[in-house]
Image (tube, rainbow, N blue to C red):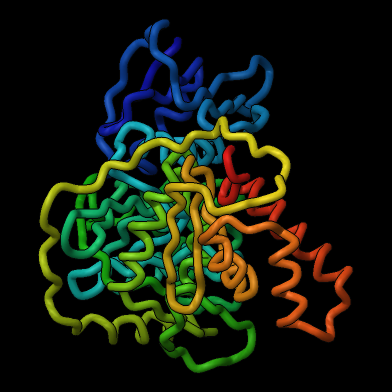
Length: 399
């Protein structure tokens, strides 16, 4: 039988073709995300298809929102894969959202967002915070919207937190015993934790802080330290799920959010110490309520192609530039990407405010760095200008 699963707020369905095992798992995974089951319609394009394979207990999984080959998974991994596709499909149906690869946990009436950093332990920390009574909005993808005034707003997904198995022996025995006792879909690799009292899909909470996780293997007292906002921006640049959004608009809202939002680094080795350390931030003042209509994001124009460098170059019109901390970030007019500029590139960008010949820039750099061979300056400058042109940030005069 072919069934379509329509999740609230998402136009495209998850399509199941003879994959009844997935239906049995969904209540324990998408426990707080309302969905309805319908017979598949031939005119409806799914965001993801899970198909039974004759003679194989595994299921064929095909994403229609990511460019990657189909995979064969067991039912639990098939659901994991489909939930990733669901997180990508959500903002495709809602132009007011961008989705970050991050965890989000409520403390003191605000949302702490933990950007994904490899092996930092965000899912385990999220589960430990849930065990301590804090509400987990998401342990993997955080949708954000941006009102005209006030803080950014995080949205609950209604998906159960997920632990990667096997749990490390270094985790406290009490936590491992607690997690093992939670009934939920699991296999050798993952265990979903459908915990009571967690936020349902669409529940909203104002942003409180970004927290970058620095997990240590050696004993280290847990501590929160402020870090520059560009450190968070660098982490978030690679965690934006919504690649179709206009990057200039994303840069504008993220720069404004980082200017108004604390950024901390949590250094820790012991899970219980990390939970206790974070619990100490719950006493901040009540946030100002978000006001005004939420920003709608336009699409990126991915069809731009850069031409060769000419004799005179300049900045293209409608580039977006924002200083975040001490670092300059740029987005091209088509909204394809955000570029981080090092200090020298930022200085050359300033020189490109008016049309200029590359030879003039070479002379200026030669005077600024007299001990650097002219050939190296010329080569490095050409590479930088070519990169800016390819990124759609500069063009030729008259083009």
